Image 1: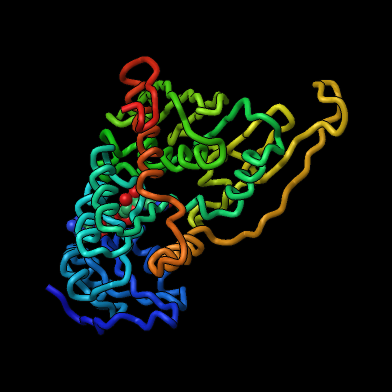
Image 2 (image 1 turned 30 degrees about the vertical axis):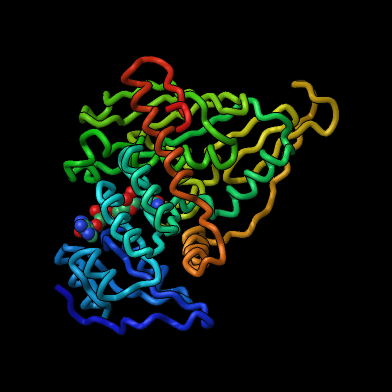
Length: 362
Ligand SMILES: NC(=O)c1ccc[n+]([C@@H]2O[C@H](COP(=O)([O-])OP(=O)(O)OC[C@H]3O[C@@H](n4cnc5c(N)ncnc54)[C@H](O)[C@@H]3O)[C@@H](O)[C@H]2O)c1
């Protein structure tokens, strides 16, 4: 089922233009469509989504419409595809792209399970199909700078990390049934981003302990979580999570990435090393100018970075990945490690113990 099909010829490579299809034109797929329409080097090859609302959107915007990913791939012959379907479909849709060697930007999480992530990354490797996973915060100049500071040694040897994910979701957010049951809570929806951020800045996570609670709302899904982490480099960390509390301390509310949330002048991550500490996203670097002791003056420097939009940068990177000019910044294997550490939060809470993380550990 298709209508309004546009031309199927490939763009001239020399122009640098790419034609990208969007699979799943729901809330986030529409954001991808907006970014695609603003990038002068990108053309929307079509939308694949069985929902009547998606067909209506395609008609309204004059875009080619397909009911499923295969029809989009074979009909529009895009140079690349953005996959913004419900999580359970990331793997089957991604496999359809890999079978046709079409590079893909897969929204997070790469899959719902490690087995799913492995099957998709295996298929992509066998067919040499690039996969970029949509952990878009890695394209944020603030996190790039934080990583440079922490990994470059400016705060010495990293000893402790604190992350806060504290915010209040509206009551009507939970009118959608899947958000009230396992998988629909802050761990797999929100915390997976913070886990990826911490891995990006502080290095691999080696072990996880956690408590989860649902006492505030009383739904089956968690609303509050306490996580303890051991990083492979030796640092220890904690993450405190609740999506049921009025509070400004989360990446969502402090980073200013999404115009939906008023930006708060606070921090949500603290990286603490033997020579200083860094508060993020305000990039406040705290160090002793003289003797390092708690009764000496402590100086705060605020570091400057560009305010570039991470989703726009991610799309520009994806365009270069499609053109084989850059390797994916977040590979399927990398995203699978983030998924593994995030799933370990639920596993550790259920176990009441420590869960080792690291795909090599089995
Ligand atoms: N990177 C981020 O910050 C971020 C933010 C929000 C959502 N996401 C991710 O984006 C994805 C979509 O989330 P959402 O909030 O837009 O969900 P959504 O439910 O609003 O949209 C999903 C869309 O997929 C469509 N769909 C269902 N089955 C399909 C199929 N077989 N083929 C094609 N389309 C199909 C649905 O009709 C719907 O339009 C999720 O994986 C989510 O984790 C990422």
